[in-house]
Image 1 (cartoon, rainbow, N blue to C red):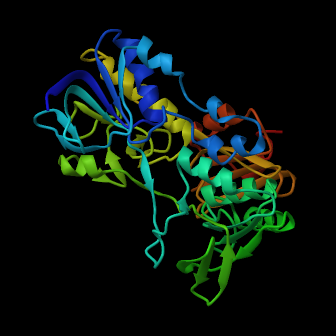
Image 2 (image 1 turned 180 degrees about the horizontal axis):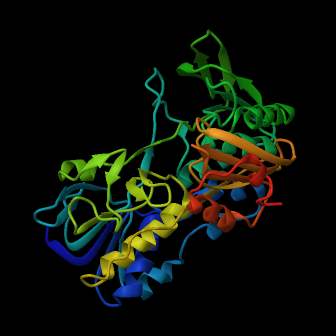
Image 3 (image 1 turned 90 degrees about the vertical axis):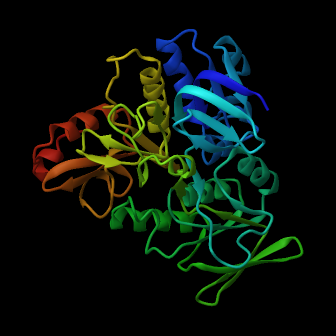
Length: 403
């Protein structure tokens, strides 16, 4: 097959890849662009898959990042349902599974992550939904009739959000996870246990266990747990996190760690190759250490930033100093958070209404490293400034910050 040549090749049809097109076109109006994605859909936002689509606040056609005409107007060639399987950094080419080869001047790897799968019998049964993609939403929505049943594996972000969404839609939900309370990696214990009680009050059953196997009995799934439990349901949804997609980078000899290692300009160990989004392990400047951030706002801004740097001339690169925030909605409880919100850090909560409305601060050595605004809105920028200050703050001072 003939080799096609582009100024820019973007591998990954998600938010980071789509945002990179905007960034490139800010700096370079004419360079040729290829956007290759493995899904059949145009790039779309993922948060509505567990939030607004279920609440009737958005329709599927509302979640696409750009209309189809955006790509034509910006002279972007689209290669959908096309999985790029190899990268030759020295020849500056990528190839897909069909044998098509594309040459680039600059490349962005924005392939995000893939859902972690369970290493147990029956884990690959047709119909077990490792929830991440638009097709997962479409197939789950079709089966999520009032009175139907679902087992949700995982008590983190995806598990808790899809469980709440299903429960709101009057699906009987059983959550299975081993942690002592919901979202234990982020919520301090008091808040986590209060949220777990809220789920149970809304009819969600909690099983503190791990799945041992899946099987099918007619149209039903049987989930056996390690402690000997057996759960019958019409749906099984697994949300146990993602693994960063690094196969291309590793195959090309690029440096990897907990993601594809990039510098402050989002360049990999090969300066003509960039990475952005869920798979980028980048220097988080405000926190003074490298991190990988799996959230919408980071993919949006990091993708655009990488695109701007790809389209910039020599000496015009800009360091990525942005502090991404993230958000979630669990029944009537919503929050926005920024910085390092790791429950293993020291936490201090300034509640107006306990475990409902207020701010949770995450501290290290007396310094604020992260903040979660619970049912408190419009304070993300203030939280960013607080983290950037870096100095120790006593509890009495923190009480006054967002009052």
